Length: 257
Ligand SMILES: Nc1ncnc2c1ncn2[C@@H]1O[C@H](COP(=O)(O)OP(=O)(O)OP(=O)(O)O)[C@@H](O)[C@H]1O
Image (cartoon, rainbow, N blue to C red; front, side):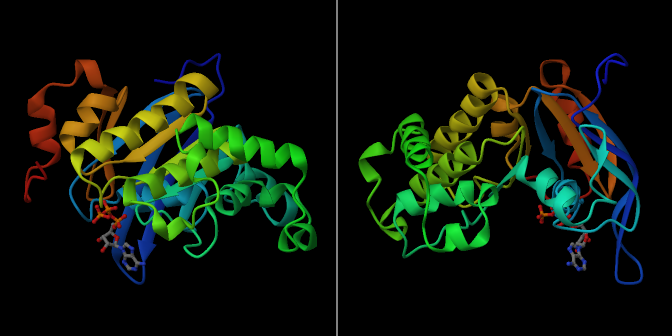
């Protein structure tokens, strides 16, 4: 867990989320994630994985508690401070979230939008350096040959790797990935997760991923967090985690694998 000498890059303190009157999303969650970790979150459908992940960059506002990014409260942040905190957090979605009719390059360049005033980015006035940065990112996910293709001409796995190149171009310290491989076959999923691992190992980005597949969690995770009914019921090193722990996390519902 968190070394007391090192400030966690993400810290949740007694975080609670209630939807409507009484649907529990999260129940008093305490969690600390350190810079450079590669964390997978597993749990049954409806356990609260998306709520946990999306609270970190405030796509969801929590009902109580505090979330700190590099020691700064994102829960309380407003205006410019919130924008700067969010610029430092990249997001990968199950559905890729690309602009389908735009080119791959244009999609990747949107990773830089938060660095520009709106009028410049809407007029596509990206600098040469940023175009080079986007091209380099595409090379790193092995899609440099698709730079001028329309996003919707690519396969699902390729589209997700464009999203990864976009996040690399954004250059955040933290990447949150919400079921990034849920719509992909196992082989394509491994390719996508390898690219996320590359961002972690080569670029030092802290990665937190929600995964349905226990098999993939085992293959790629370093630290595993088990969520059930809005609570963290397990938190440990993947290499120390026995099969029985996964059975416990997934008990009381259909297992995924
Ligand atoms: N916008 C919402 N409005 C009301 N209830 C919600 C909303 N989003 C999530 N919930 C509820 O909160 C609980 C946690 O949902 P969440 O989506 O975080 O779980 P999950 O573990 O990510 O599930 P899945 O794997 O199916 O995506 C569930 O009971 C869910 O029905």
